[in-house]
Length: 221
Length: 221
DNA sequence: GTACTACTGGACTGTACGGTCCAGTAGCTA
DNA sequence: TAGCTACTGGACCGTACAGTCCAGTAGTAC
Image (tube, rainbow over the protein chains, first blue to last red):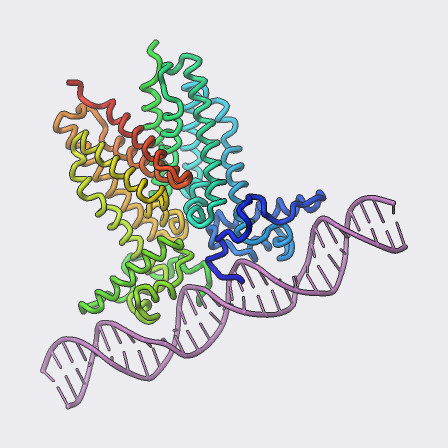
């Protein structure tokens, strides 16, 4: 019963994993992968509710039945898109995360984030946050997936800060958990304001705030 | 030519104000107001793309022609919803803004924001940011309206901080512009993380970060 | 080869949607 | 009263959508 605007309501059992068939052949794996990539693209352009399966199929390319062979329904596909979005965002920062273990690395990380927004013209915001805003309140599975993306993001920051504490670059009493959470919040909020104003300086100022706060915990000498 | 998913594209002239007729009678004003309020409600529940005019009309209540009497199209209605959302969010903090001119007032403001999220169960996030994520990339007028909401929000914080500087509660060299921008970013990011995790403590930690940063500018003695 | 499964193609269905149309009814001015 | 404008009602239209169906074609194991 295709009842529009209700497709996001989880209809299957609560166990995460009630998805469409997993491909067993290489060809099938590629088809499935093409579909998810195309869906992520269309979602980025038109939003999750605005993304039509016809468009996804045309772009993959994949036929209607291929979509429904690998995914139960649109919500199921969107869950995979959420997963892929997490990976894309975190993978894109992998090298930068590795350098987060020093003050200079921290600064470089913020510079890269701002530079990316400059290149994008302040458009788009954070893909994870976008999906959250569009689907988070209507599909708890997706919300959980996206939350885990934020968790991993925060953990990467925290690991860097912890390394800095252990290395003596930050004072031993510094609260890495809190600083990491606060930094990720500054980043996310900076992205929201940048998106609203089409002005990456909003992100710059937000991240400068985060840096300044961490800076108050630097060891003297 | 009703082309779905294209309704957000501005079709009228660029001058903001190419909206439907403004009511001249009291009755008309009430009808228009009912429609906007109902639309805001439906948008909050279903998202902007998921909000159907049938649902808005049923809830107002108002007939199809009433909707198209006061608004050119759905995009036009959404612009009014954006306006109303700004007002609702800022009006809801009016009293708190007035107290932002002291450290205690600042703390009270953050407490109130966190308490609201506790009451909401961490659901919903910021209504302005939600609209931005759903429509900001597809309708520049709406993006501008929402950006002005953030501007006013930031200005209220900045005014408070400026007062604190002038009163000597913050050091004279404190950068109120930067601190206000950074604080609003922390707030927005905290709301995103709170929404993702359904945990208002994310907002608490983000705002504690903002408070700590401002705290480093407090006058000693 | 046969048999079986994984995968693919695309026509088709029901419906909810944004938007249009026209015939009305209040309410105000004279 | 008449005449005018502001406003209201709801049937209607074309279409884009999610989801279904069934007839296929590859690939693989024997």
